Length: 448
Ligand code: UGA
Image (cartoon, rainbow, N blue to C red; front, side, top):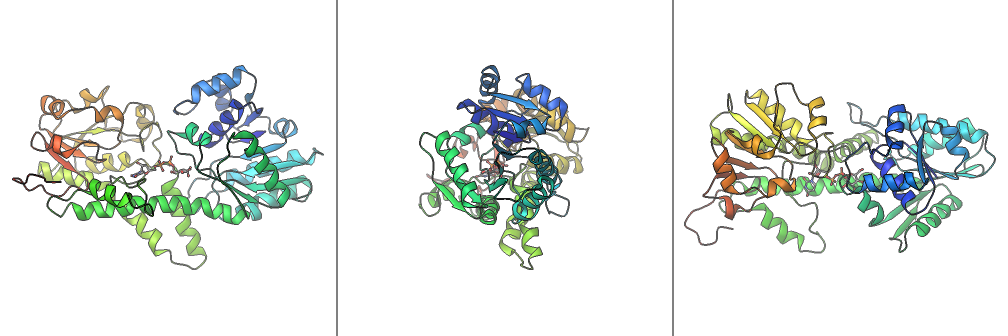
């Protein structure tokens, strides 16, 4: 099979398929990326990927190329995994989808065997039918269902656990143009997984919608718990982490995606929520709930700055340490990372900002304003600081003790933006402020 677009989803998918003995060709338009991957260097930070990549290259089960015609000729199925970035107005830039569809169509013109095309990229409902199918048909001079088949197969893997998620998905969604296309893809997945997860077969448009609905629902859970956090902060002895635990025990609600914090970032949730809003508006529907999810999220990052400002009675000239820059732990991805908003707001308040992240600093340097100072370690970052804000919950920050802050900081003020510490361990030792933690009434035996 061939995989078009060697980004996060494409590279992980290709290498995971290859690791189970399938022969996979990765296709990309960037010469340097192709070369780097072929040398065994994954272009992204992802647990387990370097080993799988090295093995599949060594066994000759995977290689990367710029030659899309040869990739189509040599394979029977092509997955489209190119990027679908958001435009400034929230709608989706489909130029890469169009370009790759054109190339696939062009290559199919010279191929007599049936070929299955699978859209894995997140695309607005209707795109596979009205763009991908149309363009391939035009270029190939063949009709969908005759010379080639078409499926929509959305991807639900998370950055940071992409390899694990590919091997252990909760479900597989197959949106099929026709029965033959769907059955071919289902057969592949049944061969790939020793024990296949539930497989839902449906229309292409439903599959496209399921992807947006999933990400919007996850975003809604986060904005919901952040709303509860903001309420908790105004109630003595309230703690959102306990509230989340309590509601999460209800099977209908479930415990995941209820971590209150500074909001969601990354390349998917913010973009997909915006795209769904835009899409609904184009249908003359006002998606009030989804708009509220976005509005809550866009303010949430600034809560960290507010807490710091309050504790320090103003931020001008203060040294603020930021622990964590990537949009979540386990990745060096800085796209839409909450840290960007926090750092910019602190600089606007004329604070001096020093930052540390175990893996994201090279990427951060390309994105954050020049004034930012970069520390080489957690300890170096908090040393001499007036306040420390936890922005990304990397494990190494969890290991810090109140004594470390007390010893190294100028003023031991800790803003726990991701609720990584137990307040009972921190309160009374350092000035501990946290998202979703109400004012603590002293003198109580059991404050939480
Ligand atoms: C998300 C979805 O979880 C995947 O299922 C989907 O495949 C992917 O988007 C995509 O569309 O490609 P990802 O962007 O890797 O995956 O990251 P998440 O784990 O969903 O986290 C997103 C953001 O939400 C992070 O900034 C994280 O810190 C935040 N978050 C997550 C919270 O603030 N609270 C939580 O309880 C969970």
